[in-house]
Image (cartoon, rainbow over all chains, first blue to last red; front, side, top):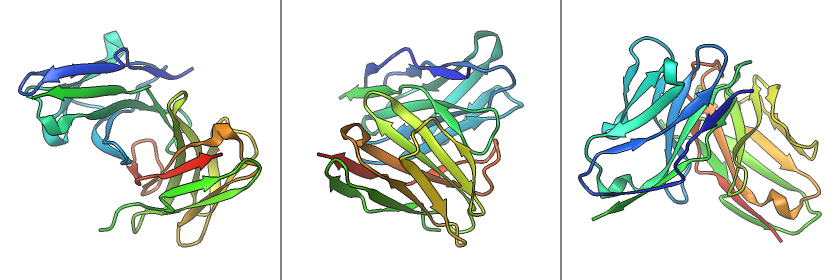
Length: 114
Length: 114
């Protein structure tokens, strides 16, 4: 069965520090992978997505993610975190059978210290 | 272009009642998906509609139903509410619902069941 694991429930970083959020997926074929961010009381905003091609994907707000098939991972990175990046981050995989069914990880809540 | 809108934003109901939530997709989008978000279960796919037809359904009881209108607006209905139905219900729209399509999420409807 398809699944997404985000091993870190909470992460705290200092403003200006680098960030890496981990995501591992279980999927038989080539996965369609997404990272979304959710601010308190808000819906989900797409940061970036991977379908095929270059395994390093650039997204909005200075985020990037690298697809590593050998490790079944799609980790999200940012070189320098801003206080406004504090939010919850979700990794998701597009389920087989298509039609917009996304399987989400449990999320990682990011706190940023000034 | 206006984003996905959901009404109402907040609802309080009592056990046994029923509730209807509404979602207006981005103009030109024909696929609408619904997700339930709870602290315990995370984000879970409910169903997806395209051209007034349900094409995909998650593992939820029959108390959860939906429909889509000819203008692509969608409603979901929950009958005989239970305490465990308290959640944030998110609607997402996309052009055609294909696996590579990007879903855009609304702000959600916060349902509280007392």
